[in-house]
Every structure is written in structure tokens, then in C-alpha cells.
Amino acid sequence: MAQSISDNNALLGVVVLVVEDDALLAMDIEDTLTGAGAVVADVCSSLDEAMARGDASDFAVAILDYSLGSDSVTPFARRLARLGIPFLFHTGTPKGQLAEWRNAPIIEKPASSQALVSAVRAMAMKQPATSSR
Image 1 (cartoon, one colour):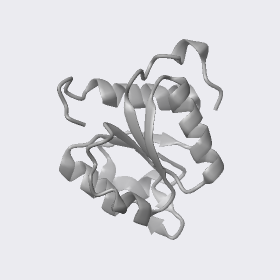
Image 2: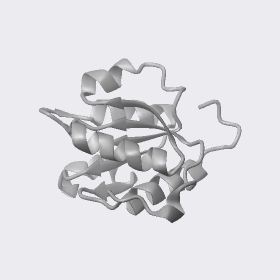
Image 3: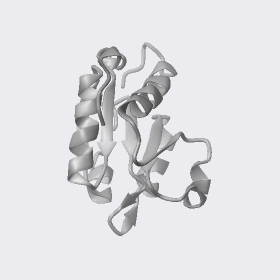
Image 4: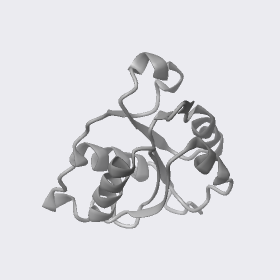
């Protein structure tokens, strides 16, 4: 994902959690986000790691890969939905398998850095300014 110069501050101060099992892609996403001014709270590479983040108060937005090895990120996505934390799917999973999440943004892999940054920015702008997250 090549970072556009115009995106340098598009996500200034937005704290993001990344759940991605492909290490190279996770590093690329992290670079894209930090290049756009975001703070990456953590990168989880498995459902267990994501679920261990019981206190979700240290990030405002999450980027989720739907398929994490043999697991689906669904239990964690459900937790985020209950907590009111916005998330998007960055996945190669066919949309038919994501029917439960038809209201969540879905960014298909491979995606440009601009598409990812724009989607995260749109979600972050919907967050209340006084949010404790």
C-alpha cells in the first residue's frame, strides 16, 4: 500500500486496533495508518489475541480480517458491536459469508492505502468528540 502524501494527517490522533493474521499485511496496514497520523493501539494476529483485549477502551476504531487462520473474527466483531466500537472488515472473504455484517464497511483485499485511510477516517468522524475511547 503506497501512502499518498496528501494523507499524512488524515487520521491524526485516531487510535486503531488491527486484527490481521498475515504478518506482512499487518505491517503494511500499520505503516499506512501511522503514515496517515493514526496511532496503532495493537496488532492482533489471532482470534485469541483479539478476544484477550477485554478492555476495549484504548482504541476508537478496529480493522478486522474476517478469516484468522481456521477461525472467524465474528466473536470479536460481536463484542465490538455490543460496545459500540466501529469496525471495518479488510478481507478477501466473499461477501456472502459476511451477511451478518451487511451494515459494516467492507474493504476488499487488496485495497489501496487511500481506500483504507478513507474508510477509517469516515468511521472516526462518526465518533463523539468526548468519547472516552
